[in-house]
Amino acid sequence: MRFKRMWAMFRARNREFFRDREAFGWNFLFPFLIIVGFSVVFKGDYNAQFKVGVFPVPPGMEAGAAAGNLPASFSGFEAVTLVGFEDGDRGLEKLKHHKIDLLVQADTDPVRYWISDASPSGAIVERLLKQAAAPDGGTQHLEKKDIQGVPIRYIDWLFPGVLGMNMMFSALYGVGWVVVRYRKNGVLKRLKATPVTALEYLTAQMLSRIFVLMFTLVIVWVGCDLVLDFSVFGSLTDMFVIFLLGSACMTALGLIIASRGTSEEFANGILNFICWPMMFLSEVWFSIEGAPDWLKAAAKIFPLTHLLTAARKIMNEGAGLAAVLPEIAILCAMTVGFLAVGAALFSWNK
Image (cartoon, rainbow, N blue to C red):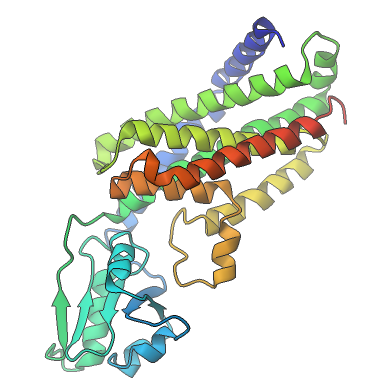
Protein backbone atom coordinates (compact mmCIF):
# COMPACT_ATOMS: atom_id res chain seq x y z
CA MET A 1 0.00 0.00 0.00
CA ARG A 2 1.62 3.26 -1.22
CA PHE A 3 0.72 6.51 0.55
CA LYS A 4 1.68 8.63 -2.49
CA ARG A 5 -0.83 6.90 -4.76
CA MET A 6 -3.55 7.03 -2.11
CA TRP A 7 -2.83 10.74 -1.55
CA ALA A 8 -3.18 11.41 -5.28
CA MET A 9 -6.60 9.71 -5.34
CA PHE A 10 -7.63 11.59 -2.19
CA ARG A 11 -6.77 14.98 -3.76
CA ALA A 12 -8.43 14.12 -7.05
CA ARG A 13 -11.69 13.13 -5.36
CA ASN A 14 -11.77 16.30 -3.27
CA ARG A 15 -11.15 18.49 -6.31
CA GLU A 16 -13.97 16.79 -8.16
CA PHE A 17 -16.35 17.48 -5.29
CA PHE A 18 -15.41 21.12 -4.77
CA ARG A 19 -15.59 21.87 -8.49
CA ASP A 20 -19.16 20.59 -8.67
CA ARG A 21 -20.78 23.83 -7.50
CA GLU A 22 -24.35 22.50 -7.42
CA ALA A 23 -23.53 19.48 -5.25
CA PHE A 24 -21.12 21.48 -3.09
CA GLY A 25 -23.64 24.26 -2.47
CA TRP A 26 -26.52 21.91 -1.76
CA ASN A 27 -24.55 20.19 1.01
CA PHE A 28 -24.63 23.52 2.87
CA LEU A 29 -28.02 24.84 1.76
CA PHE A 30 -30.10 21.74 2.51
CA PRO A 31 -29.45 21.45 6.28
CA PHE A 32 -29.81 25.22 6.69
CA LEU A 33 -33.24 25.12 5.03
CA ILE A 34 -34.36 22.20 7.20
CA ILE A 35 -33.21 23.83 10.44
CA VAL A 36 -34.75 27.22 9.64
CA GLY A 37 -37.96 25.61 8.41
CA PHE A 38 -38.46 23.55 11.55
CA SER A 39 -37.58 26.47 13.80
CA VAL A 40 -40.37 28.49 12.15
CA VAL A 41 -42.92 25.68 12.01
CA PHE A 42 -42.54 24.68 15.63
CA LYS A 43 -43.06 28.19 16.95
CA GLY A 44 -46.75 27.56 16.35
CA ASP A 45 -49.08 24.60 16.74
CA TYR A 46 -47.77 21.14 16.05
CA ASN A 47 -50.31 18.90 14.42
CA ALA A 48 -49.16 15.40 15.27
CA GLN A 49 -50.17 12.52 17.45
CA PHE A 50 -49.65 13.47 21.10
CA LYS A 51 -47.84 11.18 23.54
CA VAL A 52 -48.82 11.31 27.20
CA GLY A 53 -46.66 9.51 29.73
CA VAL A 54 -48.23 7.81 32.77
CA PHE A 55 -46.45 6.64 35.93
CA PRO A 56 -46.20 4.43 37.87
CA VAL A 57 -47.18 1.61 35.53
CA PRO A 58 -46.07 -1.89 36.65
CA PRO A 59 -44.46 -4.10 33.99
CA GLY A 60 -47.04 -5.92 31.92
CA MET A 61 -49.82 -3.43 32.63
CA GLU A 62 -51.26 -1.16 29.95
CA ALA A 63 -50.81 2.56 30.54
CA GLY A 64 -54.53 3.11 29.95
CA ALA A 65 -55.43 0.71 32.73
CA ALA A 66 -53.20 2.56 35.22
CA ALA A 67 -54.46 6.02 34.25
CA GLY A 68 -57.85 5.71 35.88
CA ASN A 69 -57.71 9.31 37.08
CA LEU A 70 -57.65 10.73 33.57
CA PRO A 71 -60.94 11.82 31.96
CA ALA A 72 -62.20 9.20 29.52
CA SER A 73 -62.66 11.83 26.83
CA PHE A 74 -58.95 12.64 27.09
CA SER A 75 -57.39 9.17 27.44
CA GLY A 76 -59.70 7.81 24.76
CA PHE A 77 -59.02 10.61 22.28
CA GLU A 78 -57.61 9.08 19.08
CA ALA A 79 -54.88 11.73 18.82
CA VAL A 80 -53.53 10.83 22.28
CA THR A 81 -51.25 7.86 22.89
CA LEU A 82 -50.58 6.78 26.49
CA VAL A 83 -47.05 5.59 27.29
CA GLY A 84 -46.35 3.85 30.60
CA PHE A 85 -43.29 4.34 32.85
CA GLU A 86 -42.39 2.47 36.00
CA ASP A 87 -41.23 5.61 37.82
CA GLY A 88 -41.52 9.36 37.53
CA ASP A 89 -37.81 10.02 36.98
CA ARG A 90 -37.86 8.01 33.78
CA GLY A 91 -40.95 9.83 32.60
CA LEU A 92 -39.49 13.26 33.39
CA GLU A 93 -36.34 12.40 31.45
CA LYS A 94 -38.43 11.52 28.41
CA LEU A 95 -40.47 14.69 28.83
CA LYS A 96 -37.39 16.92 28.97
CA HIS A 97 -36.05 15.37 25.78
CA HIS A 98 -39.33 15.70 23.86
CA LYS A 99 -40.00 11.97 23.74
CA ILE A 100 -43.45 12.64 25.23
CA ASP A 101 -45.61 15.78 25.35
CA LEU A 102 -47.08 15.52 28.85
CA LEU A 103 -46.54 13.38 31.96
CA VAL A 104 -49.30 12.33 34.38
CA GLN A 105 -49.08 10.62 37.75
CA ALA A 106 -51.57 7.78 37.96
CA ASP A 107 -54.33 7.56 40.59
CA THR A 108 -54.02 11.01 42.12
CA ASP A 109 -56.78 13.50 42.89
CA PRO A 110 -56.32 16.18 41.74
CA VAL A 111 -54.52 14.94 38.62
CA ARG A 112 -50.82 15.82 38.83
CA TYR A 113 -49.20 16.52 35.51
CA TRP A 114 -45.97 17.92 34.08
CA ILE A 115 -45.29 19.65 30.75
CA SER A 116 -42.25 21.30 29.24
CA ASP A 117 -42.66 24.96 28.37
CA ALA A 118 -40.16 24.39 25.55
CA SER A 119 -42.28 21.67 23.93
CA PRO A 120 -44.06 22.67 20.70
CA SER A 121 -47.07 20.51 21.55
CA GLY A 122 -47.13 20.48 25.37
CA ALA A 123 -49.42 23.53 25.59
CA ILE A 124 -51.91 21.90 23.22
CA VAL A 125 -52.04 18.68 25.22
CA GLU A 126 -52.44 20.67 28.44
CA ARG A 127 -55.42 22.52 26.98
CA LEU A 128 -56.97 19.23 25.85
CA LEU A 129 -56.56 17.87 29.37
CA LYS A 130 -58.09 20.95 30.97
CA GLN A 131 -61.08 20.89 28.66
CA ALA A 132 -61.64 17.19 29.30
CA ALA A 133 -61.32 17.60 33.09
CA ALA A 134 -63.64 20.60 33.30
CA PRO A 135 -65.62 21.51 30.18
CA ASP A 136 -66.39 24.93 31.63
CA GLY A 137 -62.70 25.80 31.75
CA GLY A 138 -62.14 25.17 35.46
CA THR A 139 -58.95 23.51 36.68
CA GLN A 140 -59.95 22.42 40.17
CA HIS A 141 -59.23 18.77 39.36
CA LEU A 142 -55.75 19.43 37.97
CA GLU A 143 -52.41 20.22 39.61
CA LYS A 144 -49.55 21.37 37.42
CA LYS A 145 -46.06 20.52 38.66
CA ASP A 146 -42.84 22.27 37.68
CA ILE A 147 -39.99 20.54 35.89
CA GLN A 148 -36.68 20.89 37.69
CA GLY A 149 -33.66 21.90 35.65
CA VAL A 150 -33.10 23.73 32.38
CA PRO A 151 -35.65 22.86 29.67
CA ILE A 152 -34.38 21.64 26.31
CA ARG A 153 -35.78 23.41 23.27
CA TYR A 154 -37.19 21.24 20.54
CA ILE A 155 -34.80 22.79 18.01
CA ASP A 156 -31.87 21.75 20.24
CA TRP A 157 -33.20 18.18 20.19
CA LEU A 158 -33.81 18.31 16.43
CA PHE A 159 -30.44 19.77 15.38
CA PRO A 160 -28.32 16.57 15.76
CA GLY A 161 -30.97 14.69 13.78
CA VAL A 162 -30.76 17.08 10.84
CA LEU A 163 -26.95 16.95 10.89
CA GLY A 164 -27.04 13.16 11.02
CA MET A 165 -29.55 12.97 8.16
CA ASN A 166 -27.43 15.25 5.97
CA MET A 167 -24.37 13.17 6.83
CA MET A 168 -26.22 9.96 5.95
CA PHE A 169 -27.27 11.16 2.49
CA SER A 170 -23.87 12.64 1.70
CA ALA A 171 -21.99 9.52 2.83
CA LEU A 172 -24.18 6.97 1.07
CA TYR A 173 -24.77 8.82 -2.18
CA GLY A 174 -21.32 10.44 -2.27
CA VAL A 175 -19.64 7.04 -2.17
CA GLY A 176 -22.19 4.39 -3.16
CA TRP A 177 -23.78 6.11 -6.13
CA VAL A 178 -20.62 7.86 -7.36
CA VAL A 179 -18.47 4.71 -7.46
CA VAL A 180 -21.22 2.82 -9.31
CA ARG A 181 -21.26 5.66 -11.85
CA TYR A 182 -17.46 5.39 -12.19
CA ARG A 183 -17.77 1.67 -12.83
CA LYS A 184 -20.48 2.21 -15.45
CA ASN A 185 -18.42 4.89 -17.23
CA GLY A 186 -15.31 2.69 -17.32
CA VAL A 187 -13.28 4.85 -14.91
CA LEU A 188 -12.66 1.93 -12.55
CA LYS A 189 -11.56 -0.28 -15.42
CA ARG A 190 -8.89 2.26 -16.35
CA LEU A 191 -7.81 2.57 -12.72
CA LYS A 192 -7.41 -1.20 -12.58
CA ALA A 193 -4.61 -0.87 -15.14
CA THR A 194 -2.69 1.45 -12.79
CA PRO A 195 -0.66 0.39 -9.74
CA VAL A 196 -3.53 1.51 -7.45
CA THR A 197 -4.91 -1.42 -5.45
CA ALA A 198 -8.55 -1.89 -4.49
CA LEU A 199 -7.68 -1.27 -0.83
CA GLU A 200 -5.92 2.00 -1.68
CA TYR A 201 -8.80 3.17 -3.82
CA LEU A 202 -11.47 2.36 -1.23
CA THR A 203 -9.41 3.90 1.57
CA ALA A 204 -8.96 7.11 -0.42
CA GLN A 205 -12.68 7.25 -1.21
CA MET A 206 -13.56 6.75 2.44
CA LEU A 207 -11.07 9.32 3.77
CA SER A 208 -12.13 11.86 1.16
CA ARG A 209 -15.81 11.49 2.05
CA ILE A 210 -15.10 11.70 5.80
CA PHE A 211 -13.10 14.88 5.23
CA VAL A 212 -15.94 16.44 3.21
CA LEU A 213 -18.54 15.37 5.79
CA MET A 214 -16.67 16.84 8.74
CA PHE A 215 -15.81 20.02 6.85
CA THR A 216 -19.50 20.46 6.00
CA LEU A 217 -20.51 19.64 9.57
CA VAL A 218 -18.33 22.39 11.04
CA ILE A 219 -19.56 25.03 8.58
CA VAL A 220 -23.23 24.13 9.07
CA TRP A 221 -22.85 23.96 12.86
CA VAL A 222 -21.23 27.39 13.10
CA GLY A 223 -23.71 28.96 10.70
CA CYS A 224 -26.81 27.54 12.42
CA ASP A 225 -25.45 28.36 15.87
CA LEU A 226 -24.97 32.00 14.91
CA VAL A 227 -28.64 32.20 13.88
CA LEU A 228 -30.35 29.99 16.48
CA ASP A 229 -27.88 29.95 19.42
CA PHE A 230 -27.94 26.24 20.27
CA SER A 231 -27.46 25.00 23.83
CA VAL A 232 -24.70 22.40 24.14
CA PHE A 233 -24.38 20.94 27.65
CA GLY A 234 -21.54 18.59 26.76
CA SER A 235 -18.16 18.99 25.10
CA LEU A 236 -17.90 20.15 21.50
CA THR A 237 -14.85 17.94 21.14
CA ASP A 238 -16.90 14.92 22.19
CA MET A 239 -19.58 15.89 19.68
CA PHE A 240 -16.94 16.08 16.95
CA VAL A 241 -15.62 12.62 17.87
CA ILE A 242 -19.10 11.09 17.73
CA PHE A 243 -19.91 12.62 14.36
CA LEU A 244 -16.49 11.55 13.08
CA LEU A 245 -17.23 7.94 14.05
CA GLY A 246 -20.70 8.21 12.56
CA SER A 247 -19.37 9.57 9.27
CA ALA A 248 -16.84 6.73 9.07
CA CYS A 249 -19.56 4.16 9.75
CA MET A 250 -22.00 5.47 7.15
CA THR A 251 -19.25 5.95 4.58
CA ALA A 252 -18.25 2.33 5.12
CA LEU A 253 -21.88 1.35 4.57
CA GLY A 254 -21.80 3.28 1.30
CA LEU A 255 -18.77 1.23 0.23
CA ILE A 256 -20.90 -1.91 0.33
CA ILE A 257 -23.25 -0.36 -2.22
CA ALA A 258 -20.23 0.79 -4.22
CA SER A 259 -18.58 -2.64 -4.24
CA ARG A 260 -20.68 -4.04 -7.08
CA GLY A 261 -23.09 -2.95 -9.80
CA THR A 262 -23.07 -0.82 -12.94
CA SER A 263 -26.67 0.45 -12.86
CA GLU A 264 -27.05 3.93 -11.38
CA GLU A 265 -30.82 3.50 -11.18
CA PHE A 266 -30.51 0.25 -9.22
CA ALA A 267 -27.92 1.79 -6.88
CA ASN A 268 -30.25 4.75 -6.33
CA GLY A 269 -33.08 2.39 -5.42
CA ILE A 270 -30.92 0.48 -2.96
CA LEU A 271 -29.73 3.73 -1.36
CA ASN A 272 -33.31 4.96 -0.97
CA PHE A 273 -34.24 1.59 0.53
CA ILE A 274 -31.53 2.11 3.17
CA CYS A 275 -31.98 5.85 3.78
CA TRP A 276 -35.73 6.20 4.22
CA PRO A 277 -36.13 3.64 7.05
CA MET A 278 -33.26 5.35 8.88
CA MET A 279 -34.93 8.73 8.50
CA PHE A 280 -38.13 7.53 10.16
CA LEU A 281 -36.85 4.97 12.67
CA SER A 282 -33.65 6.67 13.87
CA GLU A 283 -35.59 9.58 15.45
CA VAL A 284 -34.30 12.25 13.08
CA TRP A 285 -37.45 14.39 13.36
CA PHE A 286 -39.60 12.73 16.00
CA SER A 287 -39.43 10.20 18.79
CA ILE A 288 -40.65 6.62 18.39
CA GLU A 289 -41.44 6.43 22.11
CA GLY A 290 -44.62 4.39 22.52
CA ALA A 291 -43.99 2.40 19.33
CA PRO A 292 -44.06 -1.43 19.45
CA ASP A 293 -41.00 -3.05 20.97
CA TRP A 294 -40.14 -4.81 17.70
CA LEU A 295 -39.99 -1.46 15.92
CA LYS A 296 -37.64 -0.03 18.55
CA ALA A 297 -35.45 -3.12 18.20
CA ALA A 298 -35.44 -2.76 14.41
CA ALA A 299 -34.28 0.86 14.72
CA LYS A 300 -31.12 -0.29 16.51
CA ILE A 301 -29.78 -2.04 13.40
CA PHE A 302 -29.17 1.36 11.79
CA PRO A 303 -25.92 3.27 12.46
CA LEU A 304 -27.81 6.59 12.41
CA THR A 305 -29.79 5.51 15.50
CA HIS A 306 -26.64 5.04 17.58
CA LEU A 307 -25.05 8.21 16.20
CA LEU A 308 -28.05 10.36 17.20
CA THR A 309 -28.44 8.64 20.57
CA ALA A 310 -24.84 9.45 21.48
CA ALA A 311 -24.94 12.97 20.01
CA ARG A 312 -28.11 13.90 21.92
CA LYS A 313 -26.76 12.51 25.17
CA ILE A 314 -23.72 14.76 24.84
CA MET A 315 -25.50 17.84 23.50
CA ASN A 316 -28.72 17.73 25.53
CA GLU A 317 -27.64 15.93 28.72
CA GLY A 318 -24.00 16.93 29.08
CA ALA A 319 -22.74 13.34 28.94
CA GLY A 320 -19.10 12.53 28.22
CA LEU A 321 -17.59 9.90 25.96
CA ALA A 322 -17.55 7.40 28.81
CA ALA A 323 -21.35 7.60 29.04
CA VAL A 324 -21.77 6.78 25.34
CA LEU A 325 -19.24 3.94 25.13
CA PRO A 326 -21.93 1.42 24.07
CA GLU A 327 -22.84 3.58 21.08
CA ILE A 328 -19.15 4.15 20.26
CA ALA A 329 -18.46 0.41 20.37
CA ILE A 330 -21.43 -0.33 18.09
CA LEU A 331 -20.40 2.33 15.57
CA CYS A 332 -16.80 1.03 15.52
CA ALA A 333 -17.95 -2.59 15.12
CA MET A 334 -20.32 -1.63 12.30
CA THR A 335 -17.55 0.33 10.55
CA VAL A 336 -15.16 -2.61 10.64
CA GLY A 337 -17.90 -5.00 9.48
CA PHE A 338 -19.02 -2.77 6.60
CA LEU A 339 -15.41 -2.24 5.48
CA ALA A 340 -14.71 -5.96 5.51
CA VAL A 341 -17.81 -6.74 3.47
CA GLY A 342 -17.18 -3.90 1.03
CA ALA A 343 -13.54 -4.90 0.47
CA ALA A 344 -14.45 -8.56 0.00
CA LEU A 345 -17.16 -7.80 -2.57
CA PHE A 346 -15.41 -5.01 -4.48
CA SER A 347 -14.95 -5.43 -8.22
CA TRP A 348 -13.39 -3.01 -10.69
CA ASN A 349 -15.72 -3.82 -13.56
CA LYS A 350 -18.85 -5.75 -12.48
